[in-house]
Image 1 (cartoon, rainbow, N blue to C red):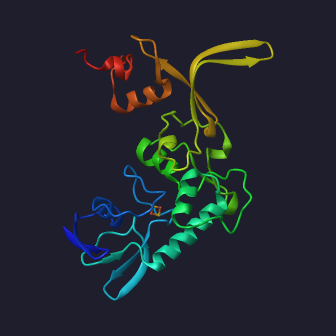
Image 2: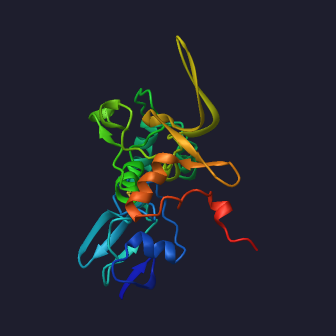
Image 3: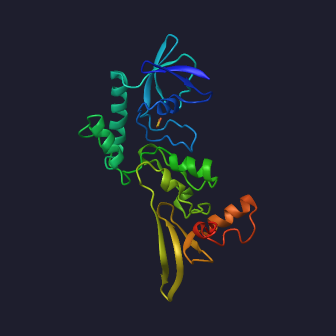
Length: 256
Ligand code: FES
């Protein structure tokens, strides 16, 4: 257990906690965009900056990566902190002026208009990398990563080709803070080609990763509920019996 001070309040923090975790625990607001409880701290967006006094050193640090060390004093809303956060957000808005999450933070910080503007095709991705980390760290699929450099940098599948490794779990969609990643389930997909067409049935489309996956239908209620590839992968990982995923989660519930 360590003792840290945040905004003049003495707080006990568990070993291994970050300043952000302790602040949240104590109900102290720090804006964030790239921090997720399921993922390791990464420090990509820089919005969570705070002022830290550690001994004689005073510095601006990202609270999501800074450990709650014994004796450190943290201030979350000094003029210096507000100025740095505003600059960080202006840069994010210069890249991505449209996501409503960024606009709301901009209003909170008194930014009426981003002073700069980069002209990008995809101006919803802030490159926080949450989707990439979730795909690697949580799902273990590693289907996407950062590609290209400079203002061409983006998240994509290798060589922008259909991802072999994407299992269609949708974790990237759920962790994305700006909603740029799209997933769509369709009940009756049809593939047309010059000589005719194939009825594909229920499918999941991972639109950003050019991946289409067949959905498994529940043996009891018939509802499509998860991509077959996801269930196969999961079955292999946990060595599940062949019929482990025959039923959807609802039909698997014990009857009352
Ligand atoms: S939340 Fe800390 S850098 Fe993004």
